[in-house]
Image (cartoon, rainbow, N blue to C red):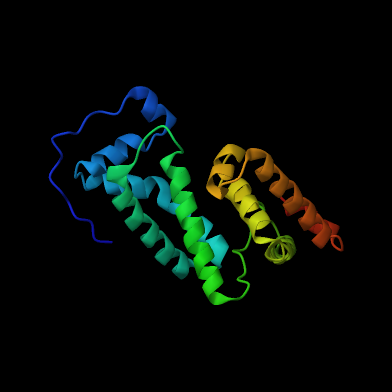
Amino acid sequence: MAITVREPSSHWMPVAASAAESDPDLPVLQRIAGGDAAACSVLLDRHLARLHALATRMLGSAEDADEVCQDAFVRAWRQAPHWKSGGARFSTWLHQVVLNLSRDRLRSRRATVPLEQLPEGAHEDTPEHAQGQRDRSLMIRRAMEQLPARQREALLLCHFQGLTNIEAAAVLAVSVDALESLLARARRGLRDLLQGGTEAYSGVPQ
């Protein structure tokens, strides 16, 4: 990803402590705005892995996720000099960008794309146990594919990305109450879809 390095701006000023505490990316964004190319790597190291995981789960393809994340971070470099503190966190905006780019790709395919296999159990002492974990993960993955898109996105953001309800609501541009409603319906929908196999409930997000 090509990054143009500019001379540091003479108007560069330190970020106030309170602002940096509310959004830890603000000092990094200010460095990028001032032409510090090394700060771009800081932003990548901080967010790339999680955003790539989100795009992969949305698209079912690590290669497509690579392209989505590259596009997202190009937008991040362009946005950095213009970012204003006091609103949503920059990481929330990045999640919105990745989510929207992934949605665009899904729409262009005009087909349902499988999600990445859900995490399996930490202890797989026997081949039979390992196979059971894979079977349960596959059942849950297929059930999630049948959920309405917004419910699936809410579940991915909160359960897999580890966002708080407030952060996930900001990413989806809905109220916290609406986000919680989406999560409740998603979990209920999963249980209904998995009704025939109670073993699979062990992996349903709570």
